[in-house]
Length: 150
Image 1: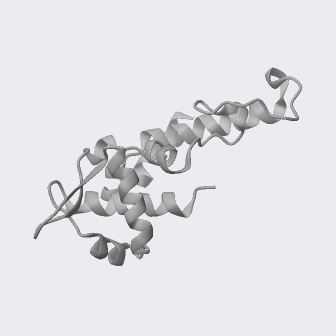
Image 2: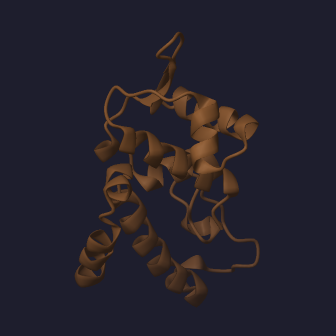
């Protein structure tokens, strides 16, 4: 399940993308516009800043803004940054592989085989859908392409 923190991160990034390149927004305004608790948003934006997705500036025109092109920020990247591995089973994780405790032979595990297909489809959508797609409202178009390629 996707955490509330990740959902807030997505909403903040989409909001910043909709404002356009070079436009900053103060945390209080972004928190109010996206209905995100301000203290929580501060933590999220710091994580996104450390990852090189946003930057902050001080002063009269200060606030947060994207520093990475929203067409190059993918849902999978953000989800892994905030929540960690997205694999449905530990034995399917690309970055945090761990053998399942109750599995004798993962090569013949029917459960793993089913969820491997789920993981592949999930990665395809998450790693192929950018913040720009969401900001521009092109999600239905993207998911239709994925469905046709499956």
